[in-house]
Length: 446
Image (cartoon, rainbow, N blue to C red; front, side, top):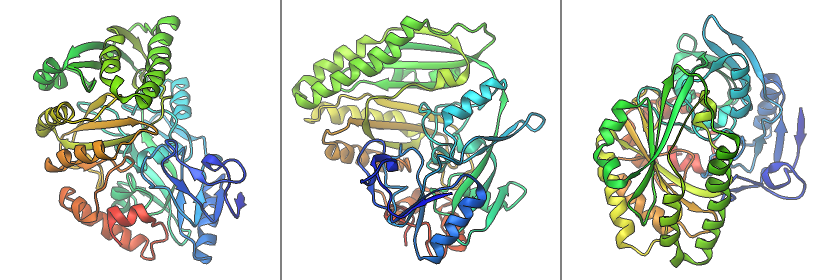
């Protein structure tokens, strides 16, 4: 195991600087870094940090916009803690090391004719980083990535290794599937998987009025529905993904590149840069952008449908609302943008999730709609996000744990029915707050 007494480099990889997250809005200056290659090396690093009085956090690829992984103690980097450990076809599971990027997991599963049931749209995250912060896609019946965990391995503050599942340490399993890094460091995860299937992806422009009027219908009729509203316009782009008998008909190489790289990344990057320099131009750019993507239909394996390249950097806030409140809240957000001086170059993303039983899942105990707002990196976002947050909290919204918000433990205890179960579990597993940092003190209390 490599251990370094002063982490260096942007992203924690090069000499001479702090660790930074993907968006560049969070910086950490840990005293020590460890890059374990096994559960045993990870446990040894945690024991050593505890003996030296250091706090411990694990950082994946830094895709959280909150300082969830920031520490001035020991920072665990998982780039050597990777790979498929076991595939059990009879049980329908795959066991994978915690630092494995989702893109590697998805490709390996596909090579074995297997797939996760649902996933988010970013493939660069590590499996433990994605699940620990509640990464999700959209699904009428299928929930977040963390909800697909059937077992996990957790290194606790004294260096012990706990195996957790519904049958083994079930009370820990209830919290650790989405644990914010507050209970220990996850070293291994087991996911439920199924034989790989095909999805028909239908992307289609639709007016704001139509998509909101038909929202319940569109959710009910589609396994995976989401849409994007372009602020300063009445235009949306919808995405409907449903299982298909095939045959596969992926996007053409040229047409796929035009949609996913040239328009969604290259041209959009230029548009955002122009908007940052000349905010008055944003409404006009938004009208053009909302018309640039045309309708298309294709059929492919799940990870090629669910995920998209994200090369334009931004900051984000996302709130989970009770499903019945979401469209009203979106209407309030649209009215806010129209009456304000805000100039918003990024679309607002709307996704769906069923209720689940994870203690700190943003969909815990209720059918959910997610509303996500973004701003181009380097653009002032505080006023827009603050005004959005006031709308969301008026509807008992729950902030995404890895995205910007200002909520504290007092607020969160009121919107999570099982919040007290999680904090009691934390008191039991980490009474000395070895895994605490400023962010966890904010959202979970002291």
